[in-house]
Structure formats: C-alpha cells, structure tokens
Image (cartoon, rainbow, N blue to C red; front, top):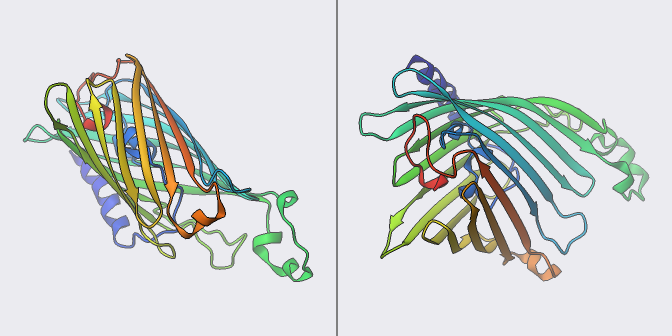
Length: 312
C-alpha cells in the first residue's frame, strides 16, 4: 500500500501543471492501452506484446509516420496485489524531424474492497530527437542563425511519465502525465522544453442480445500550444472474436475501426481515419493504423487479476 501511495503522489504532483505539446495520437489506443498508460502493465496477467504502425495523411509527402511496440507482464506481490513491468518503444518521423523514445515501466496494482483494481505506475527512459538535413530545402541564408535548423542533428534527453489505471469487469479508466520533468530542448530552442501532456482514456463493455457486446471508449489529449484532441469510438463485437465500429476525433477525422481475434493468442486491429479538417482539401490526407497483439494466455486473464474490458 505504501508503494502505491508513493506512486499516487508522483501523479498528483504532475497534475498540478499538466500542459504539454502534443505527441502522436492513436485511433487504436483502446486496443493497446499500455503504450500510453504505464499503470496498465501486467493487467492481462501474462506476457503481452503489441506492435503497430500509423501512416498519417498518407497522400502527403513528409507526413507523420509512427511505429510502436511494447511488452509487459506481471510479477507476484503480497496477498491480492501484484507488480506490473514492461518496456515501450516508439519512433516518429515527420519530414526532416523525428524522434525515438524507449522507456521501462513499473506499476503497483492492488485490489479494492469493491473488487475493482487500481494501479499506479511510472515509466522512465530517453527521448532521442533527430534532424535530417538532407531532407531540408533552405534557399535563404537567413536560416543559418536558426538553432532549430543548424543546432545539433540529434540529442538525447531523459523522460518520465506518471500514470493511474482503474478497472473492473465492466469498465476501465486511465490517466497519464507524459514528460513529467519537462526536459530541456535548448539545443534547438533557447527556451524549448518537451512539455507535459495529459492523456485520458476510458471505456466500458455492455452486454447486448446474444453474443453481441458493445464497447464504447473515449480518449483526450491536452497540451499547451495545441488544440485539445478528443475522440469517441463505439465498437460492436461478436462472440469476442470480431468487432467493427465508428468514431470521431474533434475537428479532425471520422474513424472506422475493426478488430479480429485470428488465433487464441493473436489479435489484429485496424483503424481508418477520414480527414474532415481543412487539410482534407490536399487530397489523400487520410490515415491508416494497424496494431497486432500477441499474448501468452490466449487473451484470458491470468495471475492475480480480473478481466479488463480493454483486453477482452
């Protein structure tokens, strides 16, 4: 309990100034919550691997492309509590700019008196920024004084996230503060920082008639200097094997999502985003995203945990 209290204090202190520049969004976040929420480590109870790729605005040269992979599992604790551990890797490229982040995560997960579970987690690692000059077209000499262009081509800063994850058999909610320490980016900007970002995800599982289930979810990302990004998604799933759904991201895109359990231990998710922002006029500015999940317990809860709708 004292370990959870300490982690809760880390999250609370981060909340006091949770403003950030926005990192990549993911339409498949409800199929892969650990990538954003360190506290979800170990929730499934066995080793769980997710990997994916996001091709944003696919018809535009230099548009963002994001790859991600994570692995997490569970370690025994005292009584009904357990420890979750994991690792997350993400690579993002947008034109000449890009970054790679790698971090290790830890979560302490305890059983509440209601039967639900609450976890607090942290993750720590590094963020490598890079700039490829060969992709830049700089016809004006004045840019020679711009540190964002002629600063270091790559550099590394430490990163720290703090996270909470709550779930029972019917619903779940996660809250994460990314970049808690706001590491300096002064090598490309005198006052630049990798600012904090608040990421919130919530969802539930509603039993319909027969073998049908309805899985609504919502997520939001808040950061300074960029508009808030909020989205909702409703997924209809049949017999816990295949699901299809529709969603909407604020002032940005209409979402179509699908998920299929190909084998007991293998699932595939896909999302298509139809751009409805002013950028849609550029032509072909739509987005494709895929995520693949592999686990060691056939998608069924194991260890000291209960079913979480985000992993059903």
